[in-house]
Image (cartoon, rainbow over all chains, first blue to last red; front, side, top):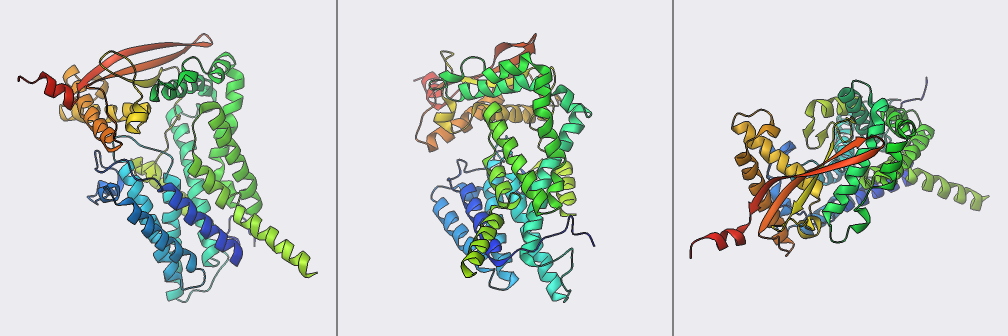
Length: 302
Length: 149
């Protein structure tokens, strides 16, 4: 049976590092006190009447961080405990992250940099829930449903791939499939971002007052501009291949990180949470560290 | 399967956190790109991000959201075709929210806050920009000043 598009085995050290890195990334994502203390235009669960404004009240943030620390440590300890404790830990982190960013996205404008983290956490909650049901029904592990940490990694990769593929599908839908042919118009988008940065803080943004050198170059070279942006679109559309195997996840993850670095360099648009999650779950830095550690240990023992 | 589920939910949910169809830069075309300028009563652009924590782009989106909501309530389908009164009302509401954000950061906005919209056209291998005034808002201090003593 082919092992492609199936969850992989995750060792104890890799699992510990995966969980530690996600815990750290989730806390980093909510590390600043919320700027908002009320809902202006409800989004997501706030639209259903769930109160999210409590997370932005003055004096609340230290308690939010303390709760995140407790849930995060429970999530970590879950490696050695019953799956129930992993569920409790990751559910707590997911709840805090969802609440914090729902409030931020209930202000009349959408921020697109935090959804991936919420999806990773929510899909990990789903993986724990399914694992509990499977254990309750005494279902044995299978190639499609291996062990908990293998599924946590697999579901996280699914969440990451879904964000990129959705973005590509929206591009196709909005341009009737002509996105790549029209991508030379990105020159004015680059110039727009340049203007936005200037008008954010005009008293200190003098460097952004004129025309962006990248925007000028792209406007003068439309064919090269299309060639520059096309690979990014193809990467997004084909992001699902990161589920093929560890090797595919590594190379595709590395390419996505490069894409983000390139976008940051040219457009000054940064998606740090996306990059961090891709490095954790696709490039799989925890696996690389665990593999290096394992090799070093093997070398010492021979 | 999990991936397909999330994609379907995102495409259907569109913009209901965390669901989103990620439309950023999804529609490049010859139409002008729009940016926002926030200025004081003397038409000088102000450091809106330093004062409120919000970028000029976010301020623009908040205004469009408020304007579209008010326009819909008034039976106008297209927000861009809202009356000057609706535009003023929307900007006044957003300006007051910005003032609260500034207050939380122990900073102050000027008493008169003007919203302007910039457009960038990509033409003949270069760019052309137009900035037009949209609306003006008076904040608490300015309102107090205009009250009869």
